[in-house]
Length: 298
Image (cartoon, rainbow, N blue to C red; front, side):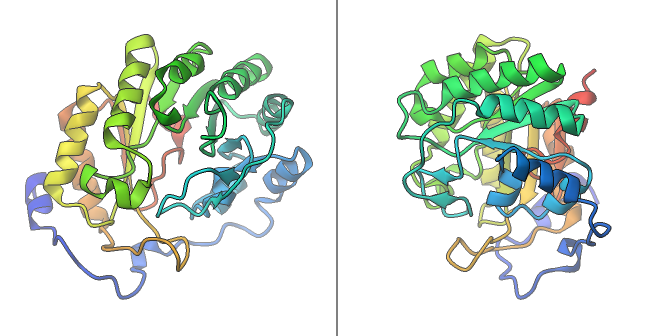
């Protein structure tokens, strides 16, 4: 079946009754993830893998990789999809960039992904902390570095500060289509996110821009196509599409489990639209196998 046929025949609403077979994952070999877990505990580091209850975390830890989450484990926003704790964050730890660099070196990472909680309580949203973390990781490891940033409340000076460290990839997620943005992202804005990505691409010609969306929240095919067109207009170079999975009872419910063939069709459509690299599948997340995406460019 052609790409368009798959997308046009996809049901708009399919109330999920149980987790489908394609979303059941094998458990990695026993104790395979202990090295990563012990190292993170030793260096007092947070990961989005743990805090967002990522379904891939055991696999990634077993492969001795993780996405480091800067600036603590408490977020100042309350997004409907995210399991990260929300409330009043603690003080910024000045030595965290060095500890992240130490972990990256000991894990032997060739590509390091740095994200953070949203820190609306900080004047720069944590941009300088990103800047110092990128420099620390690069100095210690020589690895390529990807930043997955919040929107900094639309403060483009904060985007400039992060870009001053010259990350290899600047990632900021749309998460969902404009109609669902307020319900899914709370204070997040489709327009603001596009402005952040556009600034990143405008200031860093050599920086690869990247974004991702979750499927299964109630978006239509037409809405998703429009969102992808908005990203290409930035232009956005890399794209991730994955299944939204409800992390707990108090979070947004899954409207639909998108089957693998439909993810494949979206991947083909996105590549035809001009995205340089696309990862599309039920378990795809913003930083899942991120090293492979940038490696394909070199």
